[in-house]
Length: 205
Image 1: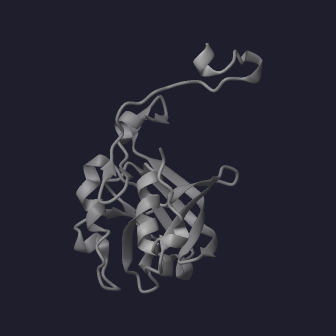
Image 2: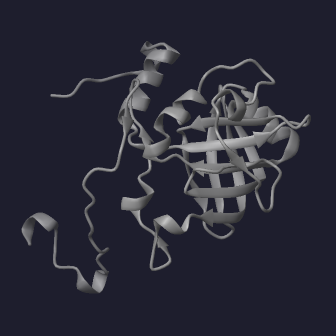
Image 3: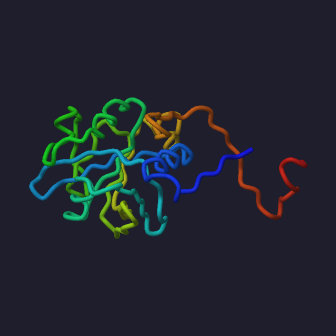
C-alpha cells in the first residue's frame, strides 16, 4: 500500500515538509558571503549539489530572498564551507534569523580566515572550503538557484589520506526532515559494472 500526495491539494509548507523528509540526506552548503559594506554573512543551505565538473560548478538554492542571496547578487562571490559533526551547533546557530546587517560570524562566535581568491572569508574550523564566483542564478517560484564556479578549493591535511579526502575524517553533516540532522553511518563500497562484465541483475547472480 502507498499513500498519494498531490501538491495541488496541499499547502506550500505541507508539501515542503514532505519534500524535505523524502529527499534525504541533503548535504549542507555552509555559505559565507560579504556585503558591500564589509559585513560577513554565514548561513546553511541544504538544497546543495554539484552542477558541473568542467568547469567545476556547485549550486545551492535560496528559499526566499535572504542576506546570502542579496550578497551573492551584489558581489558575485561566495564560499561553500563543509559542515562537519564538530560544528553541529554552530551551523544551527547561523540559521537564526538575525536582523539584516548582523554578522553570523560575530553573533555565533565563529572564527574566520581569509580566502585566497574571493573576498568572503572562510570558516577557519571547517575542513573544506570551495571559493566560488557566481556563474549564474535562476529564479524558480519562491526560490533562486545560485550556480558558483569553483575558483579555488582548500582541504585540511587532517582529513586527507593519500591526498584524497576521507569520509571517515570529513564527518559531514546532512539535513533530513523536520528538525533532524544526519551523520555518516555505515559506508558501503561497490564498483560500477562495465557492460562487458555484466552478468545479469543483482538478484539473479
